[in-house]
Length: 171
Ligand SMILES: C[S@@+](CC[C@H](N)C(=O)[O-])C[C@H]1O[C@@H](n2cnc3c(N)ncnc32)[C@H](O)[C@@H]1O
Ligand SMILES: [Zn+2]
Image 1 (tube, rainbow, N blue to C red):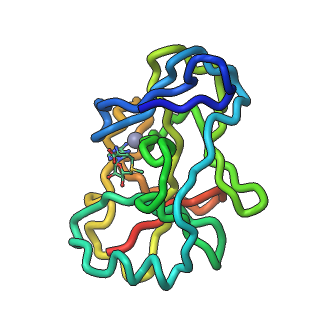
Image 2 (image 1 turned 45 degrees about the horizontal axis):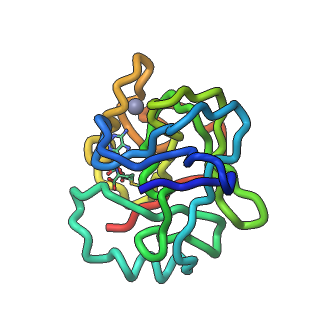
């Protein structure tokens, strides 16, 4: 599977098995810093609808294709999603998620060499009713030296600070 954002040029990214988790997205050619790589597409639903869809999900299942756009809208990339739904999380990412005009994009924050896996920091939102083992359920396997061990934000026992596009999950 591959996607091109430049028409006649060779595809910028490709989807294949990842050492981080399942499928991942990899640079098929050099991606300069600042490149808008791909839009995160999928069905746009309300938070209530996202809750309804995944209410029966196992409590220990951390897999999600949901992305919070704002207080009204969640993108469910499990429905009509594109390759962007396979971009994995890293605590030291080479991309970031950017929300503009209620659309979500994945932008390169540094130059990415061919073959490198694309990642961004999911900053999955903590919720009031999270169980005590929530960081274990959402354990990060990015493997970088500074890995915070969790895909959630804020990290365990750290002060709340930066705010960006956030992932969501429903159990
Ligand atoms: C949007 S999907 C990414 C694509 C996923 N690899 C797949 O094959 O469907 C998000 C899910 O991938 C897994 N994932 C992504 N990055 C991860 C990481 N660094 N450590 C552990 N699991 C990760 C989690 O289950 C997360 O909910
Ligand atoms: Zn990590």
